Length: 141
Image 1: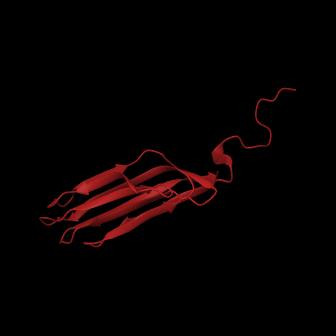
Image 2: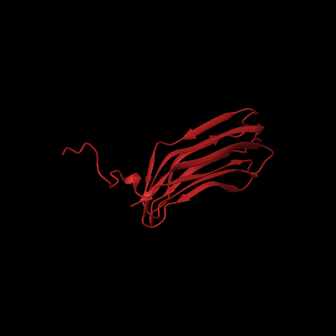
Image 3: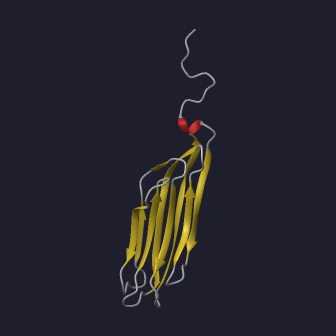
């Protein structure tokens, strides 16, 4: 008898009790503070592959002189220092309609690893609007 495929057991890591990950939101953040838009922490006994980590923002009211805005993706490996993975920046006095988008490649996470999108900008009259998000799959380690 010839077997051309595995019989019964799952053969790839992502086949082990998979579940989807989706975190994100539209954002119209207040000036002068940082706002968490999306966050994910890989639970104990699990691993995760984030296939999409993306943010896109538009200036809807021109930023004032000296006012800047940023959106950053931070990665904290379990028990280690936080590492910035990517950052989107609007410089002071950015005009209405200025747009930017940033994304990362695939991220692999172990139990306890954390990723977080934070958007914020300094106090002033300007307003930015957009969204940040994470998407992927989580599975047994």
